[in-house]
Amino acid sequence: MSYKGIIFDLDGVICFTDQYHYQAWKEMADGIGVYFDEVINNRLRGVSRMASLDIILERSEKSYSEKEKEELAAQKNEIYKKLLEQMSPADLSEEVKNTLDELRNRGHKLAIGSSSKNTKMILKQLGLEGYFDAISDGTNITYSKPDPEVFLKAAAFLGLDPSDCLVVEDALAGIDAAVAGGFHGAGIGEAATHEKVTYPLEKFSDLLSVTRGEKDEV
Ligand code: BG6
Ligand code: MG
Image (cartoon, rainbow, N blue to C red; front, side, top):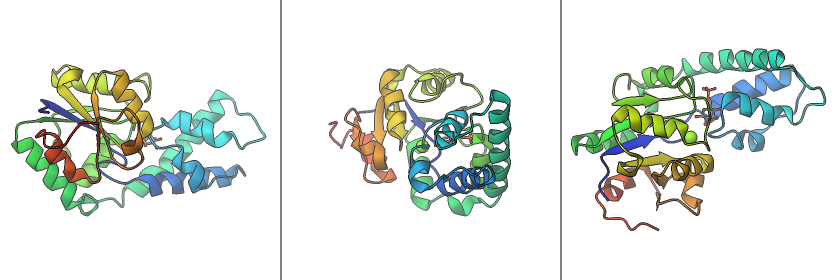
């Protein structure tokens, strides 16, 4: 099917920040003596910063006030941002860049729909500042995925209806959000297994055939 707009999740789709999130949360959790590992980290994919902290604190015997939680989240974010400084355009794969360029050349409007409040910094590190036609991120939403708000805003910023846009996601919660908003969803990784995904992708460049209508919907 031909889509006027394509809305990309950022972390896990355009770039891979999992390890940085993990290291930063791990340092914070170690600091308060709370157990944290990569399995728990997997549950944080697509989840907002404060909701991620709540998941980590499930292992804590102490209960934290809202103010203390804000402080812990801020502490994690400082560590995370320091790690993001290592990112560079070399962290953007050729496959992703070439596919984005080709989609843009074919006339699709391209947007970001990410829960991350660090979206603009990450895009800058990757050399993609100013590349997308619209950015909807953690700074302009009240509700995080699986709520569709971030994608609905991205479509509105593009001036398009959800039915004219394809959402590309790696998280199950992201496909839930796409479906809830009335979007078709293309899933990569775990999101490809979502029962409501419109197109399960094996690799990012499969988007070139999907948006040409060469790949069957499931
Ligand atoms: C999502 C990540 O993109 O952004 C989550 O998948 C993360 O793991 C969320 O918690 C919020 O990120 P940030 O940068 O605002 O802390
Ligand atoms: Mg993601």
